Image (cartoon, rainbow, N blue to C red):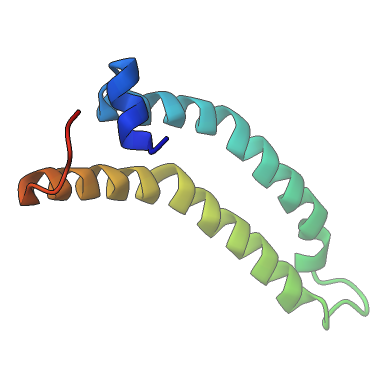
Length: 95
């Protein structure tokens, strides 16, 4: 069942659904990211003989931080704007 139909069946607005998902994501996503960060942090710190692994560690840590920001902030806002655009263009089907 497409997500739009599921929202209409349950009677929840899109804004409320995104807010609920954000509450869940804000509690679980940072735990997951911190686990990955702790695993890769030692790679990012330069020690004796670790100069070769430092770029890999920095890339992993930077990617984790970037993906968390993208997941928590950009994706929900983009989804809401696309829903408004579909409504404005008249392409959104209502049951």
